[in-house]
Length: 120
Image 1 (cartoon, one colour):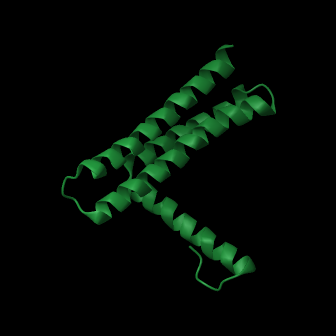
Image 2 (image 1 turned 135 degrees about the vertical axis):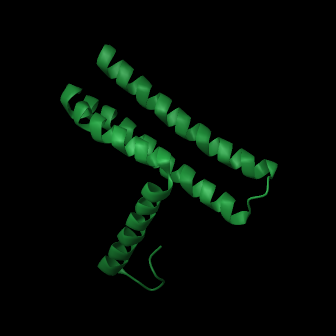
């Protein structure tokens, strides 16, 4: 978050810096994020090449971005749960499982979008 009292361009620059810090942390600490980014590096150009028109390209590329977005949110959930404590608690396990389920659904969504756009 930007520092209290910051406004205008300074606030935007601060917020962008914190966002980049979060993405760097995700890259350094989350193997799944690194794998998804590397897959995206291959698949994003394919999305632009294989999509027929702007809408198809946006659907193919957007479904890949959604996977990364959900993975970052899942990593945030995991960080908060781990901050609370490492001892087992049913609600902590549930929170992590739900985050993981959201990632899985976003990957299934990407597969469905790619299948529908490219095969129909």
